[in-house]
Image (tube, rainbow, N blue to C red; front, side):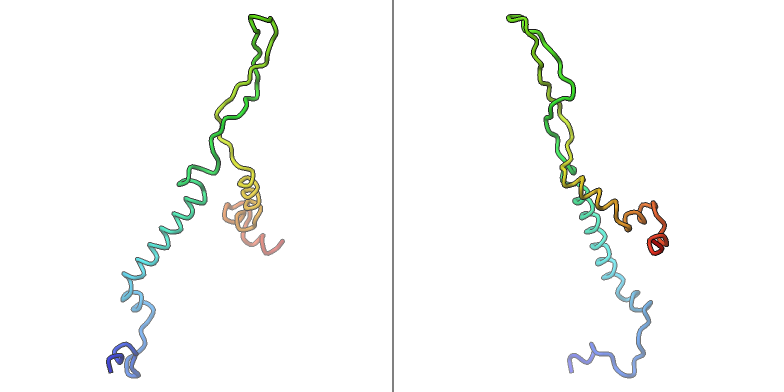
Length: 120
């Protein structure tokens, strides 16, 4: 039958894991390589490295205002000065705070030891 070569026969011994990995190494390298590149791409997009960051540059009112004197009327006016600042959206700040409170993040950044998670 044409499918007899695909099914293992009763007389052939089972392959060890090492032999199977050795025989399928090219396919495993491709799968693991694609998974690794996908993880890096996802991490880069999630962190904002590939999308221009987690915020945007916006023109915001400066914290200090300068006063100018009008030459015609002699009155002083507060001049508004705008500066270009990098502003992070509020929902991203809240999400970052929630992530930093998780046990997985604390263990991953060595702020907590893994066994402390199970004790408390």
